[in-house]
Image 1 (cartoon, rainbow, N blue to C red):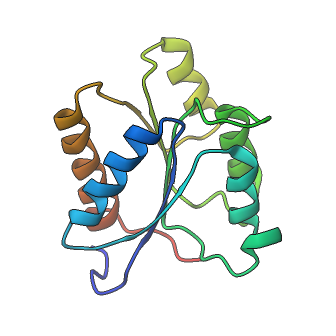
Image 2: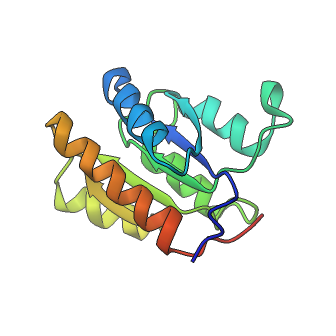
Image 3: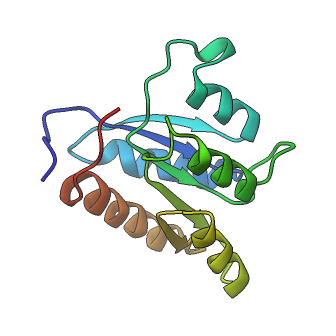
Length: 147
């Protein structure tokens, strides 16, 4: 089990600002009080994760929630693939949280080493429950790698 005394960092990469705000609210209400960084563009996420530009002192996230519809020149799949190909970033668990229930999207996510694929519910209450379950599993039960 994880050391619950350590504050965790969750990087939320979400295209929809409304869903992003709800995800951030649900995560902030948890008794673990993880630090949350929210972004909506792939290049900004890459800069943050690679500690480039404005993000030279950024902390490595413990968990990434990735929306495949993320904005930017790079697609969500390309971002996922780039992160999993990078030896310094590949150990960060990446949960794809997206609206697509297409079989090809699911297979493609796992083919580029996404850690899990969650179909984002459209209902706000169900989304909140899903986020709570993700947080419980990935931050309470699973032992995550350190940097």
